[in-house]
Image 1 (tube, rainbow, N blue to C red):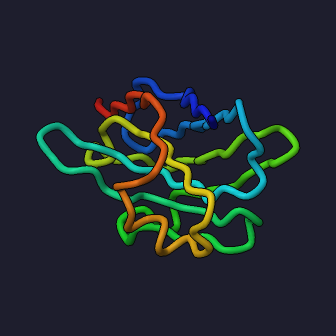
Image 2 (cartoon, rainbow, N blue to C red; image 1 turned 90 degrees about the vertical axis):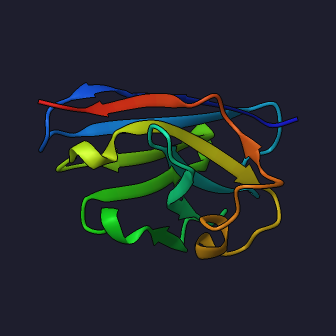
Length: 127
């Protein structure tokens, strides 16, 4: 079974940057679409950015467009989320998710059920 481990979260000031990593193990990684979801305190999970298995198709939630960049390195079994110009409203627990058959990033960012979840990494943006 595929396992996902997020890392790279932490405390950062507004305007700062973080790079999150989602490392996969236990199964072939190449054919999984990957999503980054976040959960702000007291809020539902929100699809932030997603990427197709090939890495060609990507999707960003409107609030992070132009600030976040998703990428994947299948040789390293890792997906990254580069987060720049962070804002306090970006605060939350960031999870990566995986699905073996979803083919578009947009669909992946709308699907929070029937996907594999990692344990999450905390991102706090505060001055």
